[in-house]
Image 1 (tube, one colour):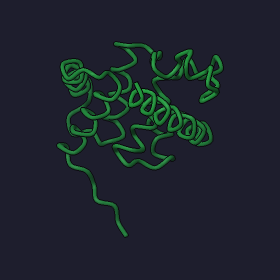
Image 2 (image 1 turned 120 degrees about the vertical axis):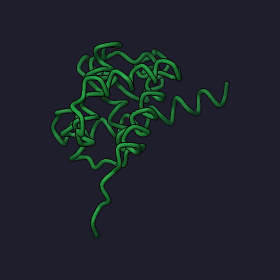
Image 3 (image 1 turned 60 degrees about the vertical axis):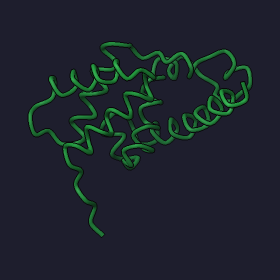
Image 4 (image 1 turned 45 degrees about the vertical axis):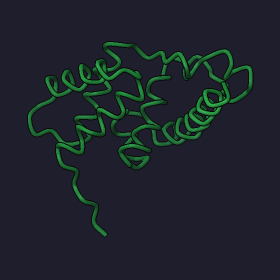
Length: 141
């Protein structure tokens, strides 16, 4: 079974969706998408576009993602964050979104984020738990 190559439009839609989940603001998403396409080479493949998006996001917002390292999450023992994970909070969230929105494999995510495969698997495990916890906490409020 061969995997269908994504069109530029599908890649753009995925990046916009990821940007929205990362920021929660349509205007900011649009600006991140524009910046990503300005920085990327014309005709770049999906992996290069996603790396460029990650670079643009970290350049604008840094690595901290407040909802991922909140005191509530650590008090409930949902995700024990060490210093290394706190510095990579945005990458953890991006890893989960690349898996769920873009449908990338663990190996492809490791290439995009330039991390070891084992690190990506750990991030996906904990990242999904935090997503579920944050969603349930928001729904119960």
